[in-house]
Image (cartoon, rainbow, N blue to C red; front, side, top):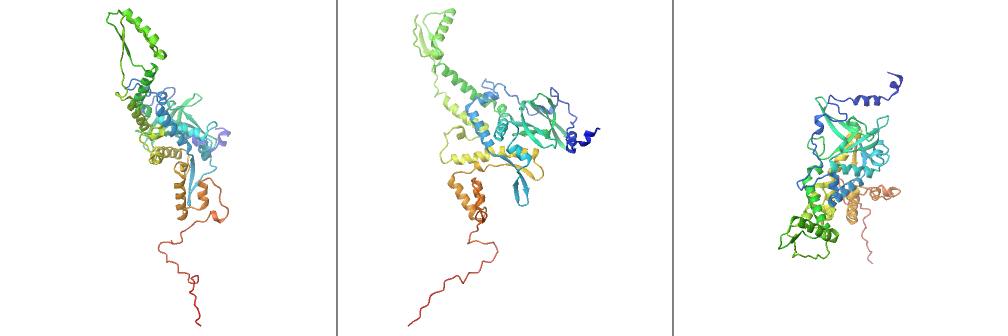
Amino acid sequence: MGLMDFLRPAIRQDQTAARAEPPVTAAAASVQSEGQWKGLVGVGSVSKAGVRVTEGAALSIPATLQALRVLAGVFAMTPLHLYLRTPSGRQLASGDPVEELLARRPNAHQTPFDFFELLMTDLLLTGNFYAYVSRDRAARPVALTRLKSGSVLVSEYFDRAEGQVLFYDATLPDGTRERFAARDIWHVRGMSRDGLLGLNPVAYARDALGGAIATADHAARFWNKGGRPSTVLTSKHTIGPDDKRRMRQDWNAQHAGADADLVAVLDQELSVQFLNHDMRQSQFVETRQFQVVDLARIWGVPPHLIFDLSRSTNNNIEHQSLEFVIYHLGPHYARVAQAATRQFAGDGQYFEHLTDALVRGDLKSRMEAYWLQRQMGIVNANELRRRENEQDIPGAAGTEYWRPGNMGLAGAPAPAPDTQSQTQPETTNAK
């Protein structure tokens, strides 16, 4: 042991010791650990509709693209803050390196909005998000680098004393691959069946997505032919194979694609018969409308947010928007905040998303709520002004709390009436 080993911080020595790998088959270029393949479902396989469903194919569906844009964008709008529990309540951990990391500068090239939008998109499309945690000499996190889901595999190890321990076989952006402890990889998983990996929506909803892709492809091919149905050329005479081939080529050359509206001139007693495709009878439009609702179910968004207003009214859209924050985004907020707390927070600290801007409602309802809180003595004037990004009122006028004059403490005797302030009746002298 040299002199420099004594000068190294103790925390770095602990970090090196914590990186000891369990007795699992080591993963180098190829993965040999059995547990790493648990829960994986092949992505890119052919659906029952006959089309291959991949991440790119799923994003080619307009309803899917809009749903992901809404979910990821709204999720990234709400900042994630670090709070400290105190005897008087909670306090924002301003200046803490972890607070600065997730709320202001996750890395050198991404804003918090960019980072969390990418995080949410990975969760929705793959079921998992991975980020490599870069640390300084004091083992404090200083940067988060997103890792592609296909470049990370989870290895589990069970110890009777410690329970289940996870390690990650990951390929970093520089091409190096090694096994990392859980402290070095921030893993946020979606809904899971084994607690190790989140379910991949593209893989499990393959047939529903494949049906939407096949329907869109059918419509594109139909309109590529000028919206014309299939055509049959008939004749009373016998036509040889070579003549049939030439007639088919001539017809397609003159009346297919952009030239489908040209006038056909036929000879040799040929007649044309069009095979009609009744879109209404086949319920083609209804099928596409149902697929939009089905896609809304897959990604977890209200239909009106992907522009399906067939069952929306002006009265229920506001309630649906509130339900969107509670039921659709709420689980994602809790999932990411708790994963950040487990990975980065210290004792007495926790992360929480600030969602006040999403649930404000209309101005009239918000002002009525503020007025009730002010009358009940829950908040003072400055606290309400801060919610509206207004400056504080100087002096005691902004920090005083109100209490209704006709109320008092439960069980306390009522105050005696002020007799001196009561007006005495006037008397007149009789003459």
